[in-house]
Amino acid sequence: MAQIGRRNSLIVLHSTPHGVYLDGGEHGEILLPNRYIPKGTSLGDSLDVFIYRDSEDRLVATTEQPFAMVGEFATLEVVSVNRNIGAFLKWGLLKDLLLPFREQAEQVYVGDKVVAYIMLDEKTDRIIATTRLNRHLSRERPPFKPAQPVPLLITARTPLGYNAIVAGTHLGLLYHTNIGAPLQVGQKINGFVSAVHPGGKIDLSLDASGYQRVASLTDRILEALKNNGGKLPYDDDSPPEVIRSHFEASKKAFKQALGALYKQRRIRFTNPGIETLDVREAKEGDWKPSGKP
Image 1: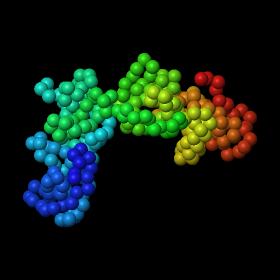
Image 2: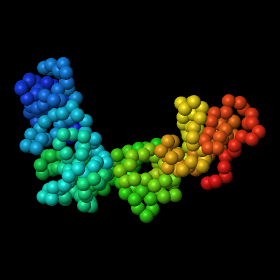
Image 3: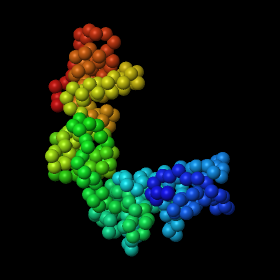
Image 4: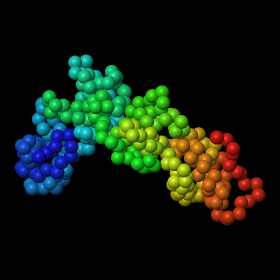
């Protein structure tokens, strides 16, 4: 049976002037309008389509890809507000996604970017969004291990740091002490699990710990040098936000990695920037790492 709000592989049954009809199983035949039909499509072909309801509550198919599907979290922009029913979010399809007033944790305005969960409304069977996120996070014991890399979605700033959805399932916390530069609500970023407490709370970091962190980062720096002709404009005096943007690492971790490469005679400091050192002996007068934090 075709799943509403998800991608499905459906068989082409027959064509009409308006498009082709697909086999939706218990949902019956579902129209794929002409503008979405791939060239060369024939009866009996299997097509990868997304299923949703149109403005007249009919199930329709599209080959377009929404920014998020049912069961997923995403950062979406508010494009309009209807004072009777709620806000509408841009989500990558011709029809905008409804965020009903009852599903708004806080009032939203046109131009806002909100972190939302995509769901099926139990009453209408329509796809809607909600910013009441906690009810849709997993209550199961987190399966994560310390130092495990995980994708993060920043949901809120708190006095302690930033709340983040971990791998699309659980809520974790990034402490201010583990962040080199401010983050934005709705930002996607890669991070690491620092600890999973007995009660299920998850501590997060933007860097792996210890030698593993430094070793991985040195490899990325050397690869960046190789791809940029042996030179880079970044060093231990570069702003934290610049380092985070280019290397997904804190300034502290970046400085440790540069120090390791310098001791290995792999790089020299050019003030500003670094370059690959082709010889194992440092030359007299070479720039050395600064002592600034």
